[in-house]
Length: 122
Image (cartoon, rainbow, N blue to C red; front, side, top):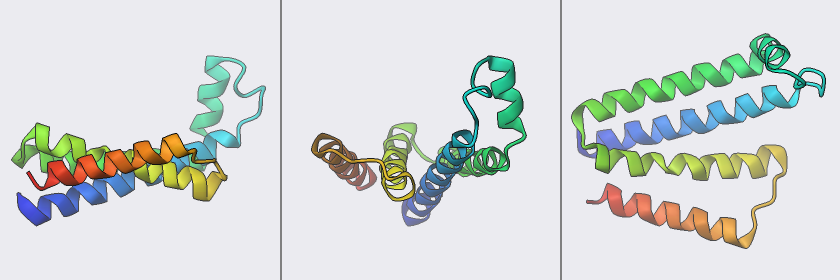
């Protein structure tokens, strides 16, 4: 798998990864201070939170697609494109959680996008 199909698969992997991270955050935000007081209580409560499970499943799907792309393409080509997941997660943080995107963060996001485009075209 090369070319346009590989890029499309990478973008699906990026979107699944970003969605997975968003669901993980949604689930972990539900935990109380007591739930976070120790490793065992944290693990127990996280394990019974449905959003955490959705996040893990989405992230696993992302990894599966990445493995398909990696099997037929150069690591040095595909991995930088996966950096677009940082962009998706930053946008998700802004849209879903109301997180602020500072000018420095926005410039960093722009650099990631430009870098991914440059690598994708190489």
